[in-house]
Length: 352
Image (cartoon, rainbow, N blue to C red; front, top):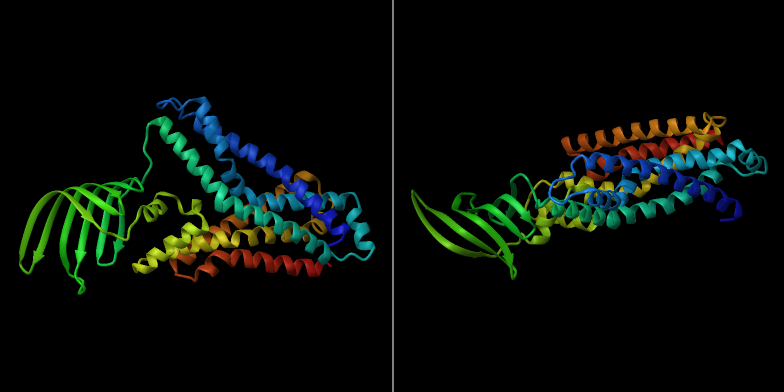
């Protein structure tokens, strides 16, 4: 990498930073305004809304990262094109592929930053923001719907999961190796303590041939492979989980013969995201030297937004279709990115 490559990278990264500042500011302002309408519940006031909005900044930045990379490249390389520096570079023997490679190097840096952002900073910030809001409102986090899990020969239904170690309205369905129902237990409350689940207010029905034996106990200790670490993953949204968390969730579901297609696709989307950022930036270069060579900043912004929207829709469609037709997760998660990268390379070689 020589000085010219660093010069192109500097322009792309600098304009990407400016675009990021503008878009994240607008996004955060929208979050603040939309959430301020819900202030007044408990102690959730203006100061808490402001804190919540600021804690959501990493998540906002991660969501906007592909469009930031695209717009930053359009603007950064566009500045070089309008000032005739790009023309001078090409006249001196620098190919468009070389400029694309420099842009790709900048994309590698942004992609790495985006991965760190999405895997650690954004989930941590969103969890802190949600806890702050729930505590201020006096609300408890958890699932608002029942949750079905499987632990070996036991099927577990959790009616209300308050936290990862506190649950209510729990039902246990013990199955025989032949798949017949052997015992049903229901508990009013359950909490995890010392590596075991402690059930309170338990009613049991044991099936023995044509006979049913019922009893009731105050407490019951249950050993289970469903730990709070597993339940914590179900409290969080899939797109707010880290790669490690999604891997654990997929492994648990595979071990218990559950359908993990959706979570496996989300895992691959996390892994493909840095490549998506790089493909977006490479895709922008032929536009700047071609269709948008003499365009102003407003036209480039509009073109970038339109491309970003189209790609976002294609990504959503690919994930939904892949989940519906059980495509392999790498294809469902990475097909739009692969197509975008192929088109970018084709246009770059053609424009060269």
